[in-house]
Length: 111
Image (tube, rainbow, N blue to C red; front, top):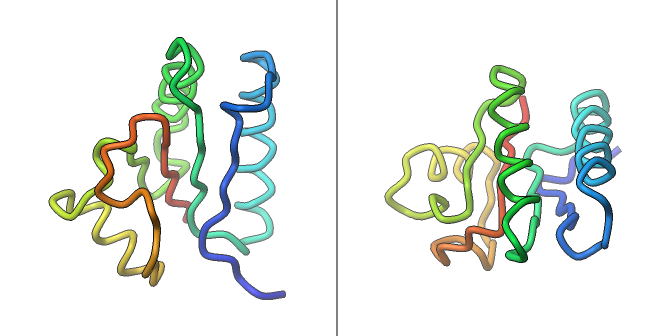
């Protein structure tokens, strides 16, 4: 099976409840870690009211140690050494959100 470097999970535009969105994220992360076919999960939370974004960010903090890193979209730029390292290690050449200060995205760098 071919490794896919980045998988995008858009939970911000699906009309899921907060609990269902978190459950989908948990399932996707668990499956990705188990299958070891994805290196980075790009989670789109959308702008909206901000509740989903904050809940997902809190969830990521609770999962501390489970991932190599979590990079919020507004921190995903050339001057963030973790973002640069992730892009280098995972050989990410193109990502339209790099350097865009997009707070509606969260990058989860998987082990």
